[in-house]
Length: 545
Image (cartoon, rainbow, N blue to C red; front, side):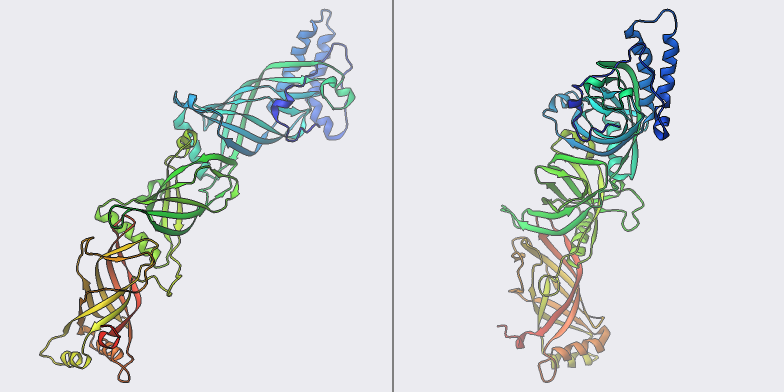
């Protein structure tokens, strides 16, 4: 057989093709598997011999058509075409198609196939091939000449331009590319096959290539079903969330959100020239069940991000790439709470289920194909790069006389609640400015409820401002704390521990079930998560003024 390897189709088209001249010897039968492969050709040629024996022989041009077309049609109809790779590239110009509601993109398709031997060197001429998906036509592939060799096992390339004129069907096949394991595309055209004889590149056995010159066999039906691999959701992996302050005219204005990502592409497609992709990131409204498709599970929009210019996606696992944008949260309380859930998971180092929904692309072809496609991913939790935790409240300094407090709690006439004041030291786990506008927290000690802390609601002008990565900012004002004796042994143990040495330990560690009203990156989430191992000390023994 003849294998053209990776030569471009249009180079082979310049060569010519064989004709069968009347009276030439018939092909000799070969042995083994080759005999099986050329059996259809021998049968056709025997029929041609019977036709030649008639008294009135047709002119040579008629003989070529009588022999060539059925023979070539048989070979074209029998072979299976396997696609190894499809490379999509931006054409030199696509705006003329876009202006009339069509889309155009260049394709380079790597294929392999096994054909019966032609008895000559063959090329599939340029063609207009209709493309169908599940019985619905979505466009036309205009191909350049494609070499078929002399038959046998060959690898070659089919190059051309895909013009899409049925966008609704095209979007269906685009979803199949994104989500399915594999799917089938049908190709149909009436093509011309060019045959070249021994003086034009045919390298088969001498007795199979005795004719010279070339011939064109028009009207050959080309109908194939091709199985393609889908991307199975692309297996999106996300890196850590980063927030970076931008210049703003308002307190805690928009911050740049940046997330690294990588994807795995097991599909048949290499996607070049994707350029800038716009992506909306949503919470997953169906988590943890996820029976519903991602596109039907969009919760609250959390952020709007874009890929960098010149973005492309090859096959296999990609390298890490950055997407950047802004937090984008509606001002409704429900949306703020859902957004806070994302940040709460992030701050407590838990992965958060999200959905990336494609909003569009700067390339019309890919924008039409991908818009609305939704991919599930997990945002990893924050790493404990400092101090071993991601607390916002890190220390509390209580203004309290321990002996007086204990006596009051043990006196049945004075009640079971102590009203005191404290100062708090706050940290900012984000890389963007954090405004603390209020705090309510339940105080827990050894798993028991012992008190309640409340910072008043503050305006943005009054808010506590924590610069990026601030550690241990002490509030200038004292805030009220209530100590409850509903679990009296636990509260007495807390008071004992915070008493100065040698009477006590000088410090105790509590947990706060906190609800923090904040503003960061232009959004105002309510951060609801446990502040663990917050140190509690007596103010008068802490060295504070």
